[in-house]
Image 1 (cartoon, rainbow, N blue to C red):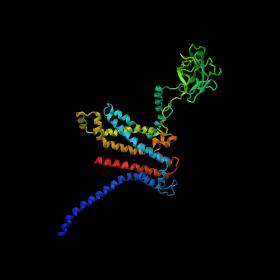
Image 2: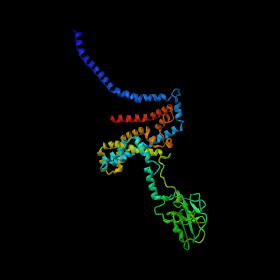
Image 3: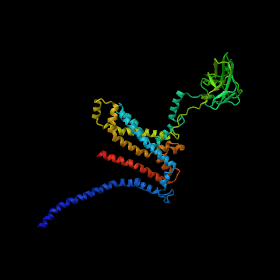
Image 4: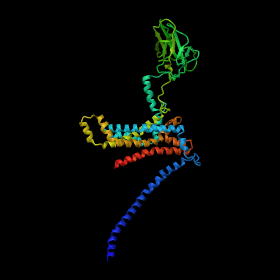
Length: 452
């Protein structure tokens, strides 16, 4: 009787436990079935390539001979790899800091703009542009030719507006025609002249189409005699359109060269300076008696200012970072703006009521409260810049590719871009992975702490 009672009391309690285990197993099976495609893709696209690269990094270029850590040792002996490490360090230090700072400033300012949504959309639009298209855009914008590169067109325009530009960069004197070229690029007369004399200074090398629009014939200027106490002359283009004429003589069809600076020099010292008129004529009045040398300064023949070599060895990395900022500033602004919108407004209003100005509120309240968001944005950008490849490969011209290379481009160049050493390339890939992993771990832990 007792045994039967025990069986009857234990059987109902064991049944729910068994059903619970079956339910858990069924739930686990369903979960595994749902996760399995993602796990297969993760294994095929991430885990296997990582393990294969680690293994491949211990073999030579052919993949048949085991070299151990030889590729890692060679990696740090290669000057190109060391330059890539240096450039990557510059990217990691400069780009995320600038982007986080710009994003913070823009996020704060946008709150005070009436059309804030339109402004955010405008700044975020570059994120929709592919890195390939952005690289092509900035490769053209940075072009050294002012007729193609918009940045150099702006720089040369500003320079020429303040410093001026030479009208005759190609002009030169004929040999044996009385003008000698000096070491600084200027020209001077071989024979002296004094008050009462008229001097003709002929130049060549200027195309008729390149003459200033107001240039007039120089012939009449030579007909006018010099007044007492004056030294007169004319600077002209010693070339007759259509041929003919006589070298060293001002013919009727030859044009004067206006706006040419002429100096009167005596005893090695410039005593007077003037500028030629539209017909190329000039005159010096009030000179003392004696012999003077006439000089055409080098500034008359200076080549035109061609702007800044944005894609030269010195500026190519900052130029590419500038393109990166254009793309990612909107991303940083939107994330920081989202954090800014969640700040407690009562703390800001209390600070204003206590007499704090906007700068004090920004520095002592806004920034400290946004510190978690700023950290996440900064670390995310650090991870991103370590993997930058497209912009560097597209924007940097071939001759300066090595000066702009980073670890990602160096890995590709060594493996597939002519190096054909996939052992060394795999070692570079492993190095890049080791540099990215700490930042990823930090970001994941930060997310978990914020969730808790």
